[in-house]
Length: 490
Image (cartoon, rainbow, N blue to C red; front, side, top):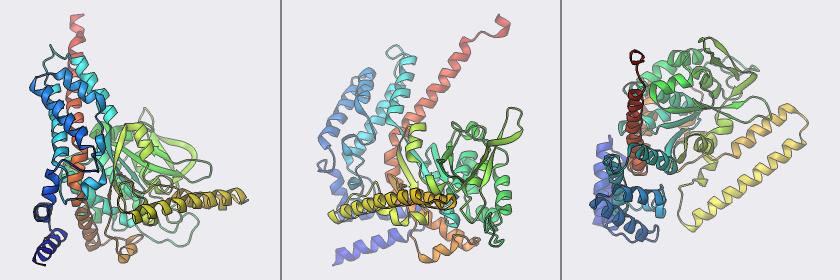
């Protein structure tokens, strides 16, 4: 009884921690007294191939001890990926508040040390071109993480707290997407330097900019809410910056999703690859155009002269979350993404959260997920039939939109969800107060803290790859510039 009371007291400390440091210390103590630390120290577990990981650690250590960079490259080429031997199994993160098996931690350390060793290897052993090729190819094969920010109308400011917590630990991925309300926060990440971002994500800054976004103008065909305040705010935030200009400024691969207002069109991902000259302000304005609330709009772009011109003329776009709340597969094709962090605050997603990719538990949980998947497939079939039978284009569009909502996946590998209360839903279309924003953002930070350690672990190798590849690219640029003869020398 005394032990249970002590454990309960520590859990209460974790729940009520006022900052991450307090949360971390209480969590570490919980692992110490609960026996989780003992579990971490034992390699054996049925949840991953500990023998494979143990052998891989020994091989990397041996190659480093011998100073053999070529052997290290060969070992990493053989099969380094984020879930080698099932080390990314959710079960291995559910046994403790912090960390996982020490063997897995050692494997991550050894891989990162190996990358450092290869980078610093003497060019007489590994020439520069071979080294650069290794980092490019292996990094591409290994993949990287993305951050996807869902829709959620007024609840979407939850993302600000999530990003704030990630930014404070340098964990915001280089690939970011946003739909609907999430597109605002994604665009802030993509257009702000790190020194600017935290200030723009504060409750004070968001309140000042969005305190009047919801202005009812009556029941009108183009939408119930007046969009002028929101449009002026977006112009103030992003001006006429294009996706390409934003990428040049920050290096962030930022995507905004939009949905077509008409039938027979798929959602679009707007970013520096697919639409470099598209104007971010208009993209975000389209993405936040919740049906019946805000009118859909035409997109705009800039030509080579810097003039504003139509982009995809004669086609209007609206709420990105209707068809592409979390566009993981397309981000994977564009950017080599193989791991996702999701901030999910879309109320439409609530019925579908049981299908989480990272859930892995009892037989009852497995049965529930299977039942949810069957219900989704049956619902999609019914909507397809109804759409075929409908003779009205207006009704077809409505059915198609509902089908798109049902047919999406609303979770990722790591999911950060709000501690939802029914009272929160009144914030969907209400102007925020300073108090409501503060509570929402602080709640988002708390919801992110339990995932910080896991995100650090799952992104360590990709961040190390990225770090050294940037250095090599800079060195390549320097060497190429030195090879080009100056005009005076000609």
